[in-house]
Image 1 (cartoon, rainbow, N blue to C red):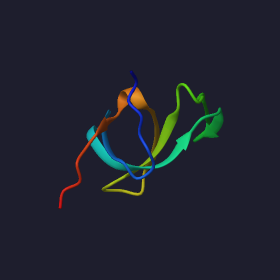
Image 2: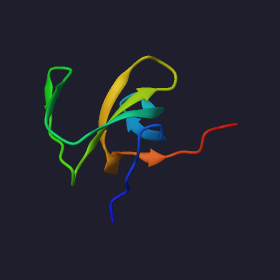
Image 3: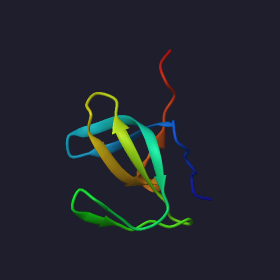
Image 4: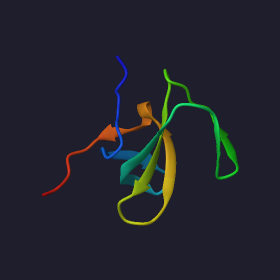
Amino acid sequence: MKKAYKVGDHVGWNSEAGRVRGTIRKKITSAIAFKGYTVRASQEEPQYLIESDTTDHRAMHKGSALRKLKRKP
């Protein structure tokens, strides 16, 4: 079973700069243009728009690239 994430979930992922953490801002379920690329997504294979915790950077990732994290109190 694939992991399902929802808007507001705190997640982590690997990037060229190392481990990054952020918050899911939107679940994408159809193909869209993002930063000059076509992001392919569907109901079965959604992608997630995530905002970094430390910068205003936004990234798009498949659920398989993400790991749900607990928020620090």
